[in-house]
Length: 314
Image (cartoon, rainbow, N blue to C red; front, side, top):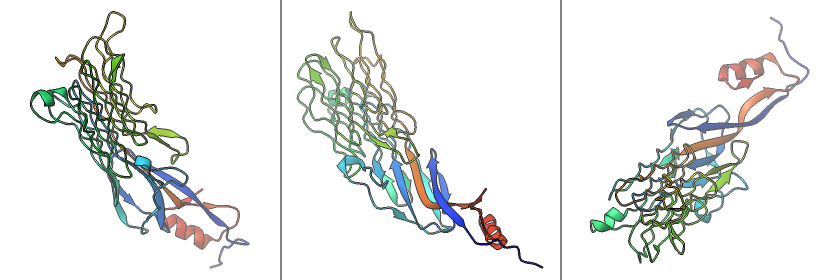
């Protein structure tokens, strides 16, 4: 049988980006030896009459980008072709009811684990003789305590930032949750209002810039509070605001799905304006030799092997 062959073999390989918005198992393709990654955990839920949820932990090995908490990009992850790698996309934390905490769930790509965002603190915790500050996490949940509270919850090293550590000195307002690139803001006194969530980070691993992991905004209680926005990237939800003669009531906003932002805090001590949940996490990888492409000349044995392996594209 004659052998079909071209004048030369010219098979090139290009990068292949795979994104995950729910948990699964990834099978490493042939010839893969390492991948760059972005792993974002679920954001924490906002507190009721309290602090904004902390953003989910943020870990990245994308060249030229950063990890959370002020860290540089991590090294690429070594993988073995054909191996099965568990992928977990963490859920956002539930809106914090009363004195409990709605911490987000961890995300991971194999051994790379990002910690779930801390749940926002609640004034109800203080009224029940419990610590009113938010929970630690990838980024920390904002405080929800009385005036003078000064103990900020901590973020996870190289993943996210802490929350603010002090409430306003007047009416009770909550602090913002921490974000991937900055801490949550303290609530203000004049004009009084909940603190903004910390800023997140932007990644272009999917080919275009997308913002992730902003902290949720703190909520307000008294009738003079202003708005409490989430972080500037928009993935963290705004805190709730009670109505005044000149401003409308604002409901708490949830963290954006698959962006890992913290949920906005609730408002009004009666619980009329409820807190909001954190956003779910996100995982993406970039395999530098993930796809084979024919570019002019090749032989049929090469084509057969690549088709059989499942990595040939026209």
